[in-house]
Image (cartoon, rainbow, N blue to C red; front, side, top):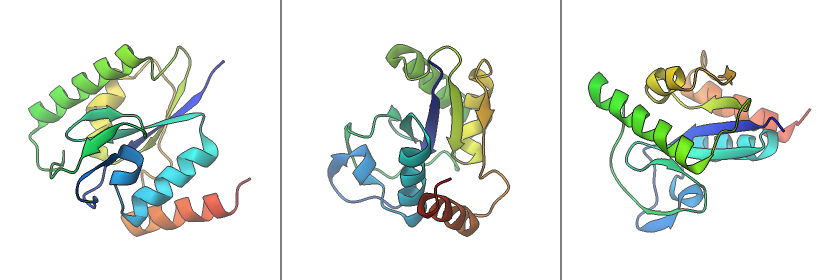
Length: 143
């Protein structure tokens, strides 16, 4: 069966200490993206600049790392590593669709590596605040 799989990017706002990944990130945008993924997709994963692909239940320690400041070569290596994690864990099956809830730095190289999958990015042309509003509205008003 074909599934829709959300890939949600990590955010700067994190709780101190070690937490399940779904509880570590605490920005309004992340909370809205997670709620949207839980409402509209079959499975979801978090894309961490430090840890790569995370299941929501995986416990991870807080960190200060982002893809935004990394050179293209490092972002490319990160994407290759995450692609291997996706393959090793079976996060995406044949024919599964990727729903990006992630910024350009997370999508640019990984998206190319996932070319065999249909991909959609509903937030692509919205600014951060608009993204949060869009997500919150759709969670509050499911179709």
